[in-house]
Length: 447
Image (tube, rainbow, N blue to C red; front, side):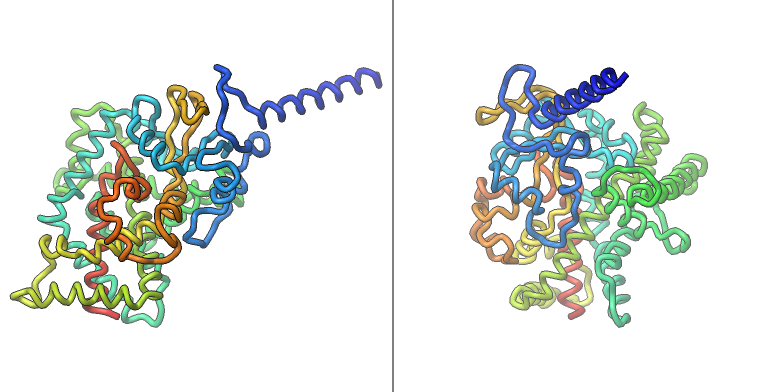
C-alpha cells in the first residue's frame, strides 16, 4: 500500500512539473519561435501584476518593466489566455490593417461578461459596418454641425454653473454624471432626473472598474458586485426598449428609434442584442470622454501658460462675433487650433484603454518570431503615446509639441487614442468636439 501511495504521489509530482514546464515554455505547433517573455503562474498567468491599479499617467509598470527586459514585443498570460503585447508602432499599424485577414476583434472576459456577447457579434464586418454607420448618423460630423453643438454647449454651461455654486466638487464623478445625462438622452431619451433611485452614471463608473478587475465571480469581489449592478442596468434598458416597441408615440428620433426601426429588417438585431448594444456604447463613450476631460482639467490646473493661451484663443472668437450672446458655431470650432493641440496632448496622456485586443486567426510571422493562431495580440496605447523616442519628455504636458509633429506619419502611428484601422472609433469626432466645447465654456465664463 505504501508503495502504491508513493508511486501515485510521485506520478502526480512528475505530471504537475511537466505541466508547469509546458506552461512556462509553450511551443508553436509548426516549430516557430515565440516572442520572449514569461507566462507567469499556471492558469492565472501574470494577471495579478497586470491588474494592479496605478495613479500615474505613465505607461503601467507591468508593461514598462517587460519592455525594458524583452523589447517592444513580448508574451505573457492574462486570465488564462496567452497574449503577445506589442508597443511597436509599425507592427501595430500592420495589425490594424489586417482585420478579418490575420486577426479579428476580441475583448477580455471581464468586459464580455459585463456587456454580453454583443461585441463578439460585431466582430463580423457587416454588423460592425452597420453599427458604425448608425453611430456616425447620430454622432458624426453632420449631426454635430446641425444639432449637437448647441446641446454640448448647454451641457457644459449647465454643468459648470452647477459646480460653481458648490464649495467643492468630486471632479471625475461630476463630469461623468454630466456626460451620462447628455449621452443617455441622445441614445435613448433617458432622463435620469426622473429616476432618482437609479444612479446610472455611478453604476457605469463601477462597471469600468470591474472591467479592469480579475473576472472572479464570488461574493466580496469587485467583479461580483459589478455583475449585480449590471442586472439592474440591463433591466432599465429592457424596459426602455419595450416601451419603444409597444408605444410608437414614445419615439423621438433618437439613436434607439433608428435601431428599433431596423429590427424589422436586420436579423441580428434581437432584443437581447439591442439592450447590450445600448449598454456597451454608453459605457465606452461615457468613460472615454469623462476620463479625458478630468485629466485635462487636472493638467490645466498645473499649467497656467496653457490656460493663458487658451483664454486668448477663445476670447478672440468672442470678439469676432457680431452678436456677443450667440452660440458657438462649427466654423468657430474649426478655428480652435491651439485648443486642438491641447486636446491632442490630453488624449495622449489620458489613455483609458489598458490595451486594444485582437485575436490571431492565422499564424503571424514578425521579426523571426511566430504569434500562433488562437493567441491574442494586445496593443498598448500608453506604451506608444508615452514613448520618449516618439514624444520627447512624454510625462510633460506640452500642447506646443503638436506644432512640430504636424503630419509626421512616423509619430502619428504612435498616437491612437481612438484605436486604428477599420475599427477606429466612430465617436472620435464627438469626443473631440465635446472636449473643445467644454474648454470653450470653461475659459470664457469661469476660472
